[in-house]
Length: 452
Ligand code: SF4
Image (cartoon, rainbow, N blue to C red; front, side):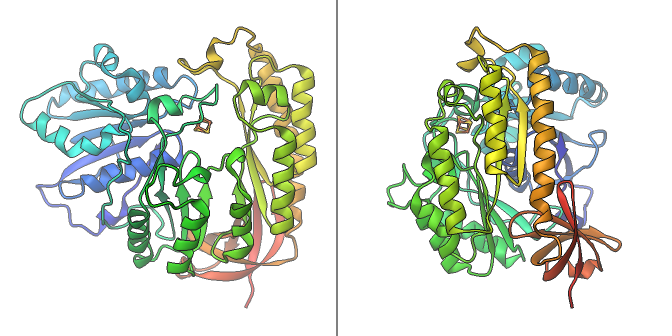
């Protein structure tokens, strides 16, 4: 659970007419971005409250990727209920993927909730609040649209650091991996028009942002439904030619759509950072087929080889699911073998857990929970060793790092390969790109010092 902080509003002097909004965000970067957009939509009326107790509006932006998401939401709502009893003017809204899944059902169980808005419904938030102000109650907006829904809002930066920012370039997904709920709760894939993306980047760069991550469920298929005839490599070229001095990253990339022309962008476009998150999910072809991932392990390895030939410094990260239905000891061993072969810089490993409504939840050969836990522990143990060995390759080297945040004399910087570097230095260095000598590799981060 993450609470988004909106520091820009520290500069707005709260008057007695400002209302207060408390936002609780669960889940991925996409949800963080959506929370940011909600706050931007409310910026003329609300300032951010860091506690629910003195808020006029509480928004819970939910995620159904996480285990027991529904249960967690109801228990959070149970804790918020006394606030509504004490202050009937308090508005409570549930938004995001769980809101999409539950719709009206949520209001039966938690009738004190004022509105339920799915991921596309959040863009009607100001209108919903107006309707509630006019006396309407129990509003639900869970329609999924076939066009890109995120409006471009020119608003001050609202992240706790102004150095990095995310820009959504796509919504939804057409891939229907059998374990995933996203296509059902975020709708079909739609791409954002290029001019809107450039306008948002322009506003961010103007405000000092230096590192931009383009977001989408599968950015590699960007442009498929756009009349403009632009694909993802063309979008990268367009952004980099307008903003050659930014650091440009993107996530997530589906391996089946990683084209040769996108691989070439890592060597041809200096703004594109040497990092790629390429979720493989499993090492056995049998399991990839049951996951409906639409690639086999041989083609995945071939793409990794091409990436490393094109960009020898590239840092690779991935997602792994262990204990997918039907996964045998032999299948699991293939995942371990793959980790040893590819040697990712970092992995995000998960125990498979059923998502109601997905195809895999109906598979009858579920792996016992105990086995899933043991397999996850093995994967983490192996990757901890590999990850540290991978980081050690940077020891005693000087790397170009962007200082992102810090307090006191403790600073945090980031390499182009997306590794975090801890160092000592004054806060005025935040936002500067420095040469940092890497003294030591630690688990999941580096330790360095500034080179004169
Ligand atoms: S590509 Fe697969 S895992 Fe990713 S969002 Fe789409 S359905 Fe889910």
